[in-house]
Each structure stands twice: as structure tokens, then as C-alpha cells.
Amino acid sequence: GDSVTQTEGLVTLTKGLPVMLNCTYQTTYSPFLFWYVQHLNEAPKLLLKSSTDNKRTEHQGFYATLHKSSSSFHLQKSSVQLSDSALYFCALSDYAQGLTFGLGTRVSVFP
Amino acid sequence: DMKVTQMPRYLIKRMGENVLLECGQDMSHETMYWYRQDPGLGLQLIYISYDVDSNSEGDIPKGYRVSRKKREHFSLILDSAKTNQTSVYFCASSSRTGGYAEQFFGPGTRLTVL
Image (cartoon, rainbow over all chains, first blue to last red; front, side, top):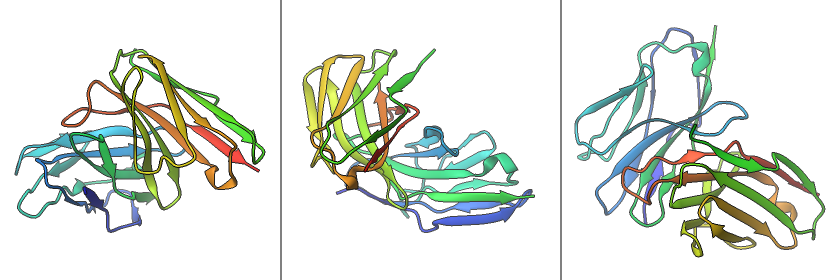
């Protein structure tokens, strides 16, 4: 079946530094990948999505590129802000069950 | 305004009691979902509903059942709740299943089973 792997459980960093959150996936279908962000005590919200190989997609300063050759969809930001502290989920869509989520990466940004 | 609502937001029940969690959406979405979220386990799919009276088990359906009698409402029922069902439950909806369809999530229900 489908699976999504996020290797970092917790990422702590200082405001203004760059961040990269890893996401790899396995599927037998054509992949549709998503990043969702969940702030404390809030619902998950879509951050960005892609199904196009080797094309960078951007939203709210975050960006990611789907690489089918390596089954990856890493999330990056050049300069994190305090408001970026949240839980980030990578998710994969299939045609029957909707989204398969990774376990999530918690990002904590300090002043 | 596109919205998914959940009621109640917080609920405390005793083991063995029945639990009803309700979800509504105003986007006329066909597909609706119930997830539970536990620390370190991410979001786990309990049930998916493709439309009225068209429901399918997700990854962890045991101990749960669902009801969808109107497109805009999707209920999650716990018959005789157990302590290990203490969790945060999220409802979501999407315009279709799979592919590029974005899921819109409700604010969640925090359920504690004592």
C-alpha cells in the first residue's frame, strides 16, 4: 500500500534560518503530494500541493519540488519566522482512500 | 465561506457510554472523512464517505461506525466507548476522492474517555 515517511520528528531552529523538512513516499499510482500545516490547537490546513515532476511549487514563502525519480517532496523555506512554529504533515493521495499522511514534523522556531 | 464544523469541540465520557460526534460542511462536497490524531501517530483514517449512505472503512475502523444521511452531515459513533479511544477527532471534506482534491478540515473534537 501507499506510505509516506517523514524522517524528522522535531526540528528546532532560530528565526531567520532556512529549514528543510524531508518527505519520501511509496505508491504504485501516479503521485499527488501535499503539505499540510497544523498550528497549535487548530485544524490542519493545506500549505501546498503538486503532481508535476521537477516543478517547484510555492506558497506563503514555503516551496517544494516533486521528484518522482527519488520519490521525494521536501518542504523548504529560506528564512523561518516565529509564526512558522507548527506541525507539518506530508501527505500522498491515492484514488480510493484519499490521503495517506506521514507522522508529521514539529517545527519550533526560537527568537 | 467554505467551512467544516464539528460538534462538540470537547467531550468527556465514561467507559462504556455511547458517543456521537457530528460534522457538517457547507461546500456540497461529495466526500467526507473521519480521522483521529494521536501524538506521534499522525492522522489516521477511520472512515470515508463517498456520498449519502456510501461509506467505506479506513485504516482503523474497529470500534467505530458512521452515518451519512445528508450530503452535508457526517456522524461518527462510538458504541460503548473505550479509554483507548481518547483522542482528537477531525472531520474533513473534499470535492472528490483522490487525485488533486484538497481536504478541508474541521476544528476537531477532543474526546476523553475515562
